[in-house]
Image (cartoon, rainbow over all chains, first blue to last red; front, side, top):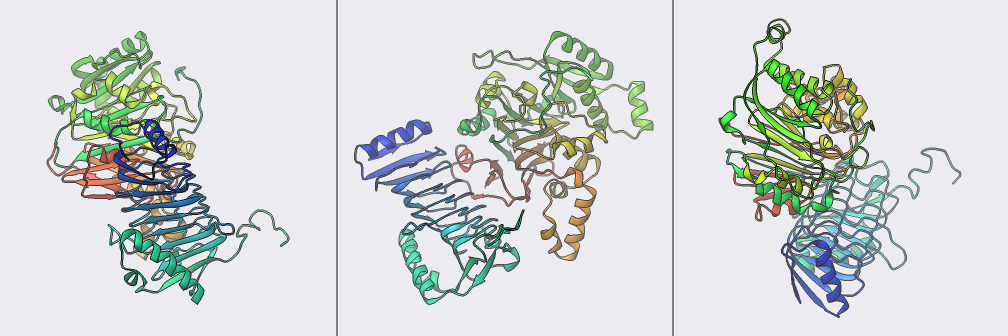
Length: 248
Length: 372
């Protein structure tokens, strides 16, 4: 079903979306979206919501199993505490993506902002994956506790910009970050180190990237042409001795 | 010092807030309805306790006069201020700022504007001939005196060919109150306020101004105390009970008085961290080290996204770790800057380029030479 969001207040729009989901819709097309907050938040069913226009902040927060396809750019705070499902953005996106994300996939085609993947976490089979196809701002993977972050640096509107910013992996203590090509070690935080991929890593990474390429109709071979490195935390408790030394 | 209301002196402000602004670099005049449309999209970033606008190029008939926008909380303030202005200024035109009475706006103060030039009084001659003061210095001095010494009287703006319009309400309500759709300008900025630490009163709404500087700000300047005391040494007195005020005066000090370029002034307000400075090539390292050493008290600490405008152009700046959102876009000769991309798309659906500037990296859009 189709919903015209032109000039519709975010609460009214989200009420319409929730009503459509409750009525059993499988596909919802939102057209003329511009800036409406909280789209797809807390949706518990495997419905596909396709958005034309720029959705507002907190897209897909607490989402549990739905798929959101954004045909344009996204804003800040996509997938906050998302549990399961998928968000696909065919443009760039803003700051603080995947905050505390606990499962599901976020696929961004182009550049992302600051603090992407902040405090992502994982438990048993719940393992979130966030892939940015462009470049990233500072604090990539900040306080990351689990899950997978992937940065490709391939699809950007800003060819002169560095692939990633400063304070990369600040406070990271779990999970893994894969970066296509090299990382700038001068911009890494003290809490992380750079490693070669193992055979198992490569297999796992290829699986995620295959999925990503399918969403954007990209050539997987092209993405895999360059070598990847793996960034891991050096410790599970990076700040254990910050204020008062504790027995380990 | 006058006993002003409200009496809270908290040293912090605001947390959420929305801002938006644009410039036509060739000086095309744009109706107020455009900026209203953009800021209204971010209605929910504010809470109705402050909205405001700055507009440039709106008074071409009086372009050589300082346009004083005054806010009066009582009749005595009006009377004393007009006596003061008549004593120190040649006033080409004095009039009410046109307003529209609407139910959403409760108890508005009285607003008047004066297009004026300093009179050649003995005091003026003393200032110019013996204290090396410029006309701008004289204006700053009078703005500080009115704000600080006349109870219930506040200078809302004091630049040439520009004006600020602000108050308690959502920005779209403030725009309706001030009939902003009747103005045309080549630079516009707007602010939607969500005050958290200081009172939501008419003087505390954004923009904050001095001469033709105007600032709208989303964030919280936790270095307010240091900044305020530093500015006091140069004669700037903070009277608006809100942190953002220091940014307007700091830019006047750094750019107009000390002759820094907007780029260097931005580096003083949002200096990189020492470890990043230390890793730079020698020349840059020495420059940034000098700026941090000389202007340590001008550094703005805490999260911020600000737009500052003047008759020269429009500049957007984030704190160095980007704790508040700022998105920019270009289309033809227009440059747009806002808290959310959607606020830009609302008035420019197909920009040529959209990007998020790095923290501490100013986005500078100057008016073309010879325009306005």
